[in-house]
Amino acid sequence: MSLIDNLARLDAATTGRAQPRATVRHRHLSQRPLVFVPLITAGEAGAPLGALIGTERTSPRLLTVAQPRDRDLRFAFLSRLAEILLPYVESYADDVEPAERTEADPETGKRVKVEVELCADAPQLIVPSRTGIEFVRLLGRSMRFRRTAEQDPDAPYPAPPRVPLLGRWLTHYGERSRVPGSSLLLAMTDLLSRHWATGQSSLEEQHLGALLAWIEAPEGTSGADAALRAELARDADGQLLCPPAGPATDPAFDNQLLAPAIERHDRARTALAAAADGVEADALLASLGAAEREIDALVASRTRPTWDAVWRGLDALCTLPEAPHTVDRWRGDRWSFTGHRDRVAAGEPPQPRVDDAVTAANKLATREREQARLDAQEALDDPLVMAGRRLAGEAFAGEVTDVVMAYSEGRAPRPRPLVTVRTPDRPQLDEGVKAYRSLAGKPQSFQFVTHTPDGALVLRLLDKMGRGKEPEPGSVPEVGDHVCWTLFEHEQRGGPRLPDPEDTPWTHGGPPETAATTPAVGTPPAPVGDRPDPVTAEDIL
Image (cartoon, rainbow, N blue to C red; front, side, top):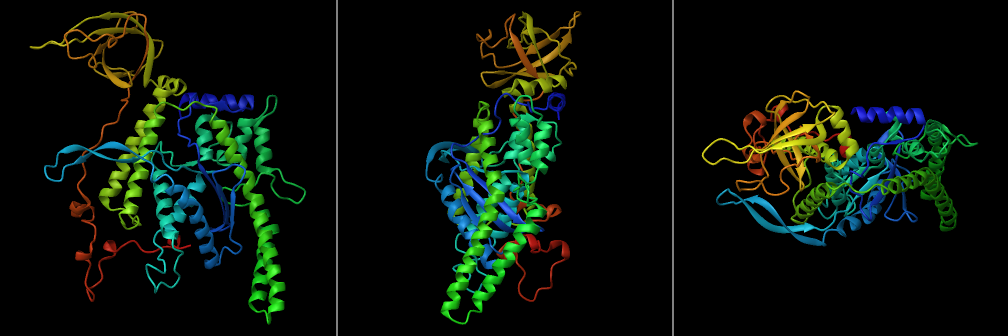
């Protein structure tokens, strides 16, 4: 956390109002996002209790599980969830535009450009908090390996037809959410805390109601008091006025309202199963319907406040203009969505439980590269973020006071102007260190030469001046210009190419096991270290 962020938190604690941490919005927001507010049973992370889901603020779809421990009812919940979520995802799959991508030629091995399809837009999923993202990942892990009756007629508990496909999409969204700067799956608490600083800790900011209380606090009121009311205020029956559907529930709600309602549902269901005749069954069926409607009302009462809070958060974020580099990062999300669409259409198997060594290394390298890229782009887009980098000595801004034309040595001298800059910042500069400025969206390199007697900086311009003996107009800073330089690169370089998974060295587990290398029946079991990842309780709801 930068010094600017710490100052913003101190200012928020002093004034009682949230303070801006950004002047632009650093994440892409879709015109039609799908908001998903899940609710789970206390003590059982894999047992969904219900959810509100939809793309319209005023008409969400309510899904409930009257008895979360019942496998058939859970499957019915997941089937209804697939009926809502999959059509939304698939509605973006057919609208494509031509694009170019660099691939290796299978014959020569050289990198060549090929024309492919790129989805013009991608579906965006928004959950209330970070734990909602973990729940999405858990749902995907538990569903993508399920077998349907069509796939395996002998499966003991076949899943509904579209449930495994939903699991694959949720797994992809959960994995993509780990890439810094991605906007396919977003948590509202992370979005708001990225753009506003409060007097709370990062853990307290995972309560969406408390976070919004700081941001929406009217003039003359304290955000701390409003957040405390959002966290602790209860009605006459002892229930929270701002229930945390994120996706955990409040113990008072579980003990006083939910548990008795589920018990009444179970009794009505048991009595209906034991009904002696049709007349008695009709009466008991009405009793069962009343019990289900009671549970629906309870789930709606816990999720609707959070649903409204998510949309209020979207309203607050839409007041900020979108950062320029957000478009580039969203294009990366579109490539990710298009690639998974193509893998599903090609009939590829679901994502493995454990990645092989090459895939895991590629994912780690991608996340590290995207984190550095995100940090650089946010600073370039936002002067408030850049101020934090300047205070840390990672950037500096100043006025150009002198420009002296100089040339490199050699048979073909190239222009290497010396630019003198007066700056109040204290950058961490040693002789030969490179600095960069943004020129028409591209980084232009400078090299630090020396300090002048009066404390100014002398930089040598290295590139982006054209091919001629004289620099192109506008490529060299002029006297009187105010320019910002960074000591970090604007574009991150890729690392060394990793081998194909089939060529994984033995030091990293060897190539992935295939049908040809699978031991035959009767072969002694493999050593413990070589056995596949066992099925755990997280794999099955």
